[in-house]
Length: 100
Image (cartoon, rainbow, N blue to C red; front, side, top):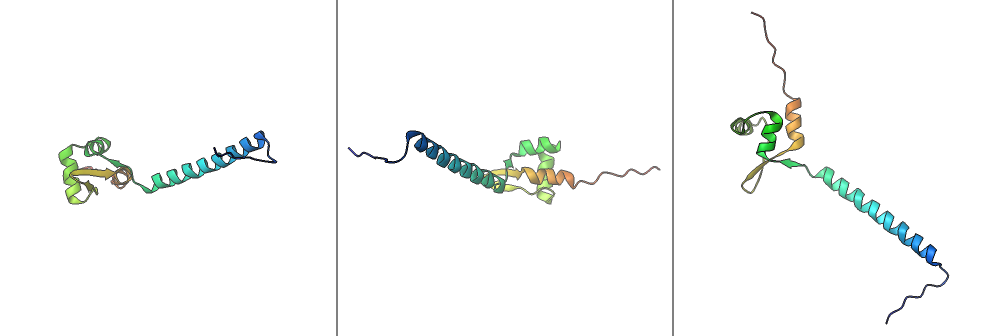
């Protein structure tokens, strides 16, 4: 049986050292995960995109064909980046009505 003998360190010091090391590693892991999430765009379905924009699926399809809203094909599915959808909303110019 393998035994590890620690001389010159109390149980409390060992526990505190382990807590410090584990805490630091967890912070690093969480930081890396949040950085990775920021780099990966959130993709949403056609239905979710149409609901956000308040349009029908055929209208969304036409806008995609015209290049108004960029889409990504994943296999046989079409997805939209959530940020691109909201950017498209920001770029819409309001209609200016003229009085006759």
